[in-house]
Length: 339
Image (cartoon, rainbow, N blue to C red; front, side, top):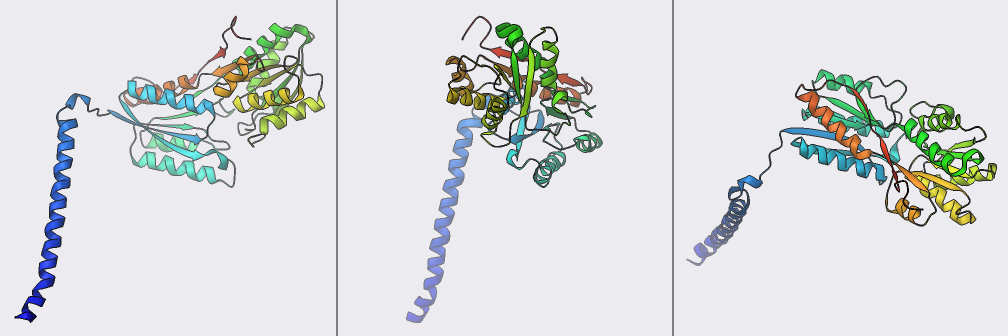
């Protein structure tokens, strides 16, 4: 009898454990059903089913331009009843042994396999998007590349900024302050993937065109910021050392703006050298409030995101054809306000 009892003990223990597990499962299922009933089943009006699926492939960076770009993407996706999925590629890896190309290609292939209703790609440095456009076209998926400015060889549909107009605005602001006495230095982006030399850069050409109407004003120098976080400071310091007569600095992005401002502060030249910046974030706004930066030309990144999503969905439903769209900018502070 004792031996029989010992033999039954494992069976009893197993039965108790099984009963306990079953009770836990029943409890979890019950809780799940209660949660479902208290939300979706009782409030069907709050359940949102997206009609479209849009994928955006963007650089992973804290640059405020991309923050506003994402705001535009999300806002327009909601308007278009689209679910937005964002994939990020590492901006720090751009141009390093093709690693970014591999990362972007991987996300693009995932978007293709998911049969998205539209794919938006912020064109990374050194990458030709023609292959992506062809593959998307073969899969009958709208493809909309995004870029600060259209590359020289860009002939397809896409949404870009307009750095020529931005350069013209920067030049106009400086001429309004300094007139023919303007001695201008420009800090350009480190990105050379679009194939432009200094004098071919859209921003540079915009400034140069504006100066033609004001004899005496001179575009003294142009330098590229470096990739590092202090790239704007290094570029500005180098330019002022080589050209100490510069009295106005025009910057292509927020990093260059903040870097140039720091150099001016360190050298004690606040108020002596005009800084016209680009884009907007809390630091740029603070520098404007302090009078270190005279104004900033904010590229309409949100409009770029909105236009990209609208173009992709428009093509998907057959209401729009592929087209090239250029978005504008605004100036802060508005004229008549601020320092």
